[in-house]
Length: 363
Image (cartoon, rainbow, N blue to C red; front, top):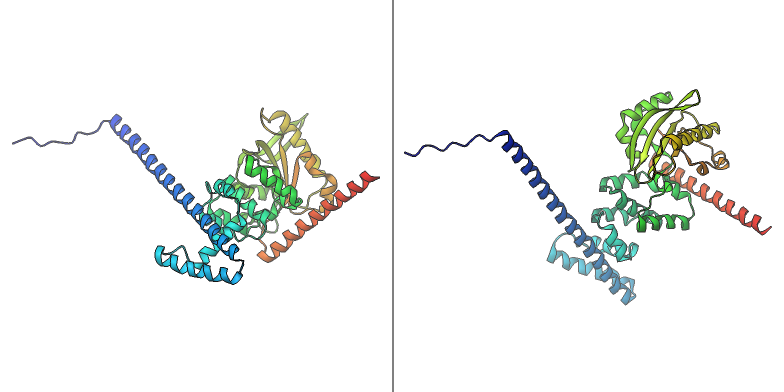
């Protein structure tokens, strides 16, 4: 009889090599699956754009609205019979709308490297061209999931950015810079207000309570700040002569390549807060800024602010942003009204300032 063959017990080195091999093989499989998913998504997005374009060309050629209604319904019925779900009348109309709001195939090709068809379905219904392009480019740049995109749209991120308060031509210029050069400006990064409802703060609290709550919910706080923020320090000690000052929070923004100093205020913004933040920024520029970095920028988070006071102080010239924080979310309609009013007011002030400068130049 032949002796039974016993499996040799692997050596520690063999076990280690086996684990390394398994890790590498898992990585290769996951990478291949991701490549396949990307290719499928790219093909699907391009197919929907081309189908929308082809149907739209046919409808425009006939120049009859009733023909468009009939042909889309007829084609959808036939395609659904032949190819199954995904080609309903509603789906075909969405494809037509896709081409209408994104007529440039090159822009679509750039976006679909990061955006899935589900991303586009969230963006297409947005009525404002600038708002639509903002969400598309920020989604591409920051690689948002569909869930994050929905949350950003529902939270009116565009309306909360400093960019939304600018004239349309400046917004378009910034978005073009983002699309062609991946250039992210502070106006795209900073927002007002910030939603801090996740902190669970009560009506009566101290600045330290806010800071403590932020540290407990640091991940959610960074998500609200936006992609690119990295935590650096809490209560950063700043020594000037023989005096010690303490900056509440210090972050670094990887895309802007600059330190971001955050000062928390329990009450409304006061003019004296500007001088304090300027001191912090000058100190950081002298002692903490590294070669290749941009100048530090400051964010004063306060319970409220007065518009004219902020404008007169010209804080942006000092690299300072002021924003309110809300510890409770407003109903959506009220939120929309407040943000739209803030945008309209800011644009009116900019237009008035422009007219005054023009009239002053004529004199």
